[in-house]
Amino acid sequence: MRTETPWGPWEPDPLAEVAARFAQARVPWWIAGGYALELAAGHAFREHADIDVSLLRRDQLAVQEVLPSWEWWAADPPGTLRRWLPGEVLPPGVHDIWCRPGEREPWRVQFMLEESEGPVWVSRRDPRVRRPVEEIGLVGADGVPRLAPEIQLHYKAKSPRPKDEQDFDALLPVLSEPQRAWLAGAVEGTYGPHPWAARLRG
Image (cartoon, rainbow, N blue to C red; front, side, top):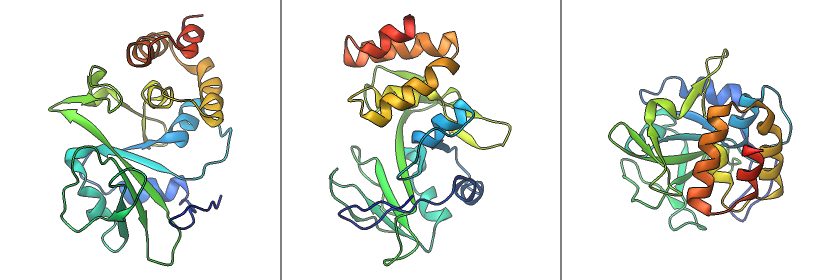
């Protein structure tokens, strides 16, 4: 799927290519966004304008190591893009990186930086929402690590767009009881009363 943006077109790489390319990384990483939810659901249910990979902020330079010949651009400040320089450590608050093979190429992969304190993941939506880093991802039979669906949905619950509602509808039947309980509590704790929480407990 090709989409236009003020900074040039997006034409995301296929999931298998992204996973194969990043398999050489020496740090934890996870497919995120809508693709992570489709992997959890076990089937495709919508188109994707981009493809997201999450990794811990402390491991951000792994992006430059895995894609050494590519262009890297940081959303700094959010809503704009600027070149991310080799070896530069992005400051707190910058958690979105766009990458493409060259200046005249479409954007191919988006990286999201996750916060952590030692072995504990900390949600960038709400620092009270925490889990051990080793529990924020899952690995399917295909061997591709993906962000746990309840964590991805917690991000999406802030201001749900139509595609976020579609994602929630698709994932609700496949979430386990522990996943539902965690997500309901995290959503209410972060955003207050929320229609998703009622459905998760229903």
